[in-house]
Image 1: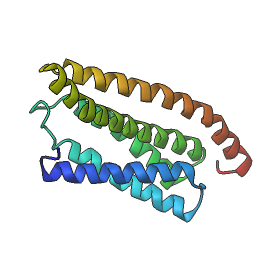
Image 2 (image 1 turned 60 degrees about the vertical axis):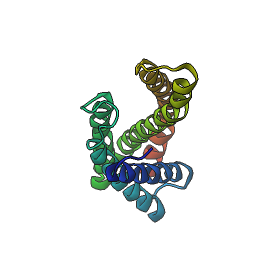
Image 3 (image 1 turned 180 degrees about the vertical axis):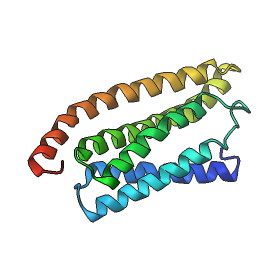
Image 4 (image 1 turned 90 degrees about the vertical axis):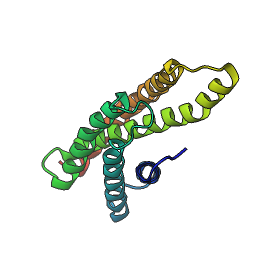
Length: 170
């Protein structure tokens, strides 16, 4: 399934970013471990986004997935620099932007998994040769992940704001 060195590097970096991001969410915050995981996540995501622009196996040209890679850059950059610079009000910004960065990564992972597992089945079982089912799976899985992810981020944003106010992290 991996057809190039860029694809291999992209996949390894994506898995590392997924794991680092998951650990960030389940482990205590404001620790040296959290900061180390954050740097790991940010560096891995940077590699994921850069290598995404060298992957053209699907359509042999720039496509919607490359556009999503472009859209994934601002949340990563804004979330990283909010924590790095630590200016007043940084914590809620850091939380929100990094959550949206991770949400995009999870949506891409779910879409990729759906298309790599379901699409070969659809092609083999029903002899489908159109990209319409592929884009349908990408769209539906991405929409579901984003819908539930945004709800979770918004619910927890109030807790972060409360912590920010109580802790004086502003």
